[in-house]
Image (cartoon, rainbow, N blue to C red; front, side, top):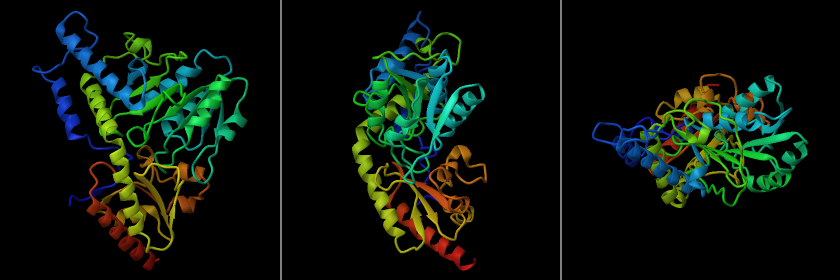
Length: 382
């Protein structure tokens, strides 16, 4: 068994070997290395064909039209493009979001707030979920956009975006969903759920880092203003030479995710059950977030009487996280856990465990055993 055991799939996933193999075909002189925007020769045509093939693969996973997929450098850029692009040109715009969104949404909204945009910050329940009534109550005449994540990256809880999207469609308010943690883990269907903008990331779905996409609905036509200017790529929404090898990697990763979605959900549900059963003999363990409305691969637990930092130091043979990878350099308690009502002390006792495609059953058992040993030892020396 490889050590440390990797249980931080919510931070990033390893690239699937089939994805890496496909990417290598688009880098070297004997491969398809041309610029997809080069329209005067075969090298460019071949690269463009590869990019469009990947666009179809990504669109297929979320049941979108390929023309609705805009390539970006990742979900952070997609969030920025969606939010800033949606409010640009509006006089006195108002945005609704929540206090437990990813930093890519929070910091973008805070920047807009400092620049005169009005923001309403919704607080979820203890289960980490935002209810449709909260959104409806916060709506104003000048509300331009609502931005909510589908699956929380720290808790794994899953907001029911369908009734929210239907209500916002009736009101003529744009709806942006950060689906970075949802794609490949649960069904995402923009043909059935009328979201307007949806952010995607490759490296959360066994694809490469540095590439993502923004879904931009065509019917009714959603207009956003570009944030990066240059050659007018991606129908003027996102300029920059497209990284063919990364895009092809994202396409292949999403194709694999589509084919394996139900099977992987079942396997991860089994791992979750096994893990929690393995810890059932340990007292003072609390699950953070909804136990019902969630994806199976992310489990956030607090351990009474044990500081998470000390616990992580003791768990040298496990790669786990005390929160979002984007905030792991800070010693501040998780803003997500505080956002669902935990105090500083409770938040400092929480760890996130996340399983994935390459997790082995014996690793789940090993993790539970290690946690029990280390927690028991730390409690005995208090």
